[in-house]
Figure 1 (cartoon, rainbow, N blue to C red):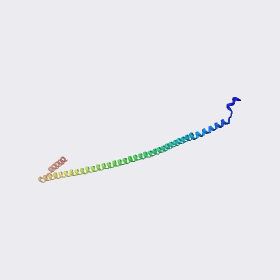
Figure 2: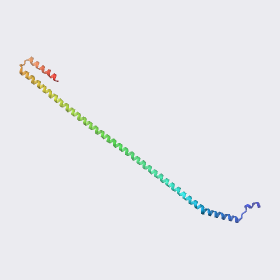
Figure 3: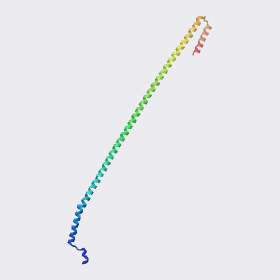
Figure 4: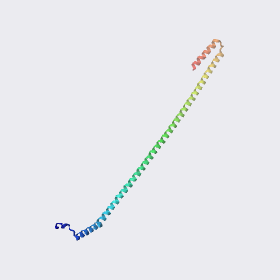
Length: 167
C-alpha cells in the first residue's frame, strides 16, 4: 500500500492547510473583499444615481413636451381667434363700405332727379314764356288788324307752326 501514500491523511498537513486557508481567506476578506465590495457599492450607487438622473431627465422631457403641446395648442387657438377677429373686422369694413357706397349712390340719384326736375321746371317755364310771348304777339296782330275768318285761320296756323319750331 505504499503506492497510496500520496492519499494519506496527515492531520498536521490538514491542520496547516486549513490554517493557511483561513489566514488566506481572512487576508482576502480584510484587504481585498472589503475594498472590492466598497468599489462595487460605489459603482452600484453611481449606476443608481445615473438611472435616477435619466428617469428625472425623461420625466422633465415629458413635462416639457406636454408644456410645448399645450403652448402649441394655445398658439393655434390664438391664431384661429386672430383670423376670426380679422375676418369679422374685414366683414364689418366691407359692410360699412357697401353702406357708404349705397348711401352715395342714393344721394347721387336724388341729386340727379332733383336736377332733372329743376331742368324740367325751367323748360316748362321757358315754354310758358315763349307761349305767352307768342300769344301777346298774336294779340297785338289781332288788335292792330281787323280779323276775318281767313285771317283768323292763318294766324292760328302761323301760331301752330311757331310752336312746332320752338319745340
